[in-house]
Amino acid sequence: MRFDAYSTQLMRYYIPHMTSKGGPTEWVELKFEAENEYTRLDMFLSLDSDFYLIEEKPAVHVLETGLGIKFSKSDFAWCTNCYIYLIANIFTDQRYYITSKSVNQDARLNNLVPTEIMVNPF
Image (cartoon, rainbow, N blue to C red; front, top):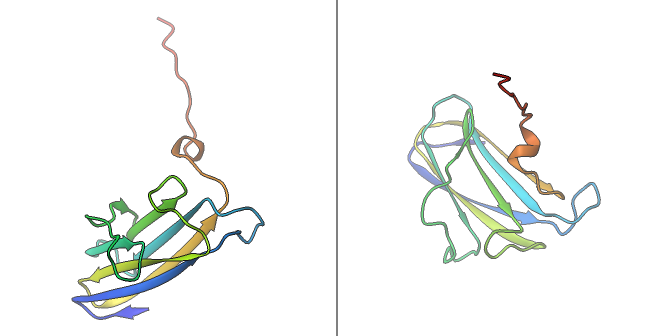
């Protein structure tokens, strides 16, 4: 999608009860990425359409070309079969790619990053 500079975009996303793989949804991931790297962008997550339940600060999950939000069953007001709202403040006129994914297992950082145990024998 192409957005104008100095604009605010409001988007609505549905959280399904079941994922496409058949398990219950345990978290959703929203990514808002710019076509060019190092683009200034602010992103907020709201849990209601009146924007009463909104984050107090922008999303800080920095990706290579944008920002991401992970909303899971361990977060406040988690729900399925409901909508969440994404508020994006755009500062640069360009094309943006917005993706969402629902997952049925909670992926932790230590499961995603391989580690090795090194022992100093001396």
